Length: 124
Image 1 (cartoon, rainbow, N blue to C red):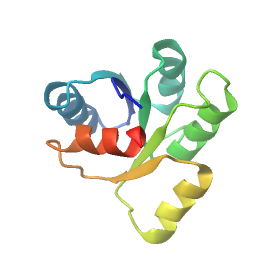
Image 2 (cartoon, rainbow, N blue to C red; image 1 turned 180 degrees about the vertical axis):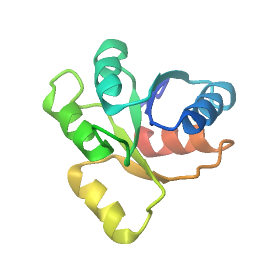
Image 3 (cartoon, one colour; image 1 turned 30 degrees about the horizontal axis):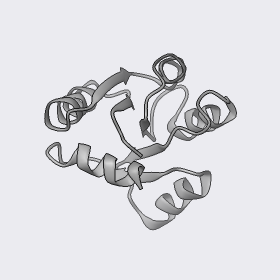
Image 4 (cartoon, rainbow, N blue to C red; image 1 turned 30 degrees about the vertical axis):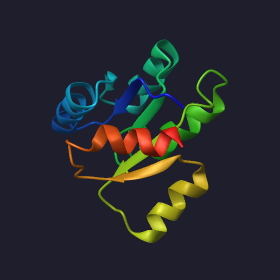
């Protein structure tokens, strides 16, 4: 799969800023940003990104709930979703894989390799 665009959903402004720079400037990808699960769902339908980077812990609609709604909507059901989490313990990783996540990226991530990691995970 050729990855050209990413929707980054994270409630932390610093993560969105660093992620956008890492994915667009370093990785050459088009980046869409959402600060909540609700906004992310709308952007996913509107922008049709090649992959979604989704924070696990957010106020309101958290990552797993946002993921479930993405999967329920025929327009977004097949978009690869990569969870981002600071809790990278095995049982957490297994939980997100069992939900159907394409992959998991640990936070904090390395900005210089983020785009390559996203492409590797989502591109097969």
